[in-house]
Image: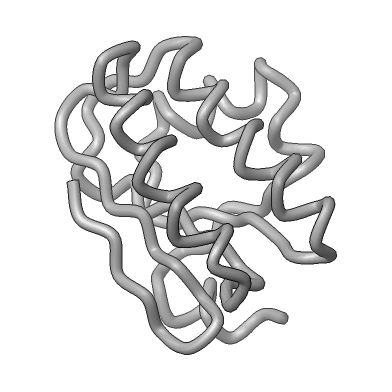
Length: 109
């Protein structure tokens, strides 16, 4: 997993399976950066995610709540059809937008 900060945006780039063990690592690292106070947008890059379970949904939801509290936003890009379906079935699609690529995700305020 890699986290990139670009201005006021943080891009979380998980790889492989976004499950319970991986989710806690993402949560800890991302929250540490967000709580410094400079991040206004969290972007999940799902390009290299092959599988996501309810823990992954929890990571997204938790970052959404945190960003909502500071008037920020959460979005994603690079999701395969399986990940898009999971986001839709979980109801997250009402809260976050999935963009076709990183550039589009960064452009939208």
